[in-house]
Length: 386
Image (cartoon, rainbow, N blue to C red):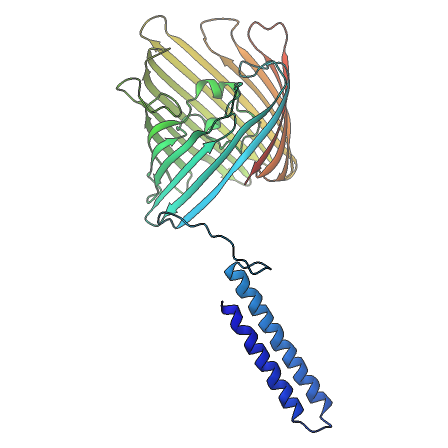
């Protein structure tokens, strides 16, 4: 070990200094002697610091044991391992059709992922979920694939993604699961957007990322499905832009749509469209989104489903405490009456360390169809990103 060579040097220096002092007359100059001693102490301290630095570089602990080093199988230039946990408690009635009418503790998400980069412009992501990964009640947890894709990133105006990924439809749906204002996404978002799909996507941005787009072609059968139910694909696209950004005020707009043919519980062509807007200023943010899906059935009457949400948040203690309100409406069939759900949410978020460690408390007050009164549900979540 390199650090072992330091100790003979220190010993030789000490002995040489001692012999020099011994050869001096019996009545030495006290000032010169003190200067030599200070010089010796300084040199010994320098050697000690060099030794500590070498031990840190080699990863040797106080007992002289070097840690086990983890390497990579490929030729990645960057490799990161991490994930996040979202644990929550729920109490009260079923505010909408996604929730049970019972109190419960829920391991909402427990994700572990690996991200890496290659020098020639390729990135990859592999992420799995070990938690419930749904608001539905399950009888047992199981590991399931979340994201698995490769991205060619050589050109900012045309990144190409191949694998299973979030499809470009719906503003709230595309937000990372750790960045949402409220604990759960809105009911219109969950009912009218599409889940992760296997396929190919092109995405890019222009004018210093003020304008961007994404377009994808996927199987259309959902997450972790390896087959296509017919010989056609689902096509999706989204365009977004920053319309205004000045003096601390920012306005962003987005539009998106999809179309695809389904075979199964619904047989026919399904077409969706949506628009969204986000305004931020002085610690406040307002978001609005509208989504509508048309079901063109091979047999039976065509139907339309639509929904919208309006949410606002404000940091009443900058960077720490955030208040949140949201109103949303979902109609599964615009031709029918008495089937609409409205939902109000009020909440507070305490950011212990940004989104990496935060506590969220939400109260939902919903009016499901055929309900004699409004249904209230309290949800608390602790989030940890590692």
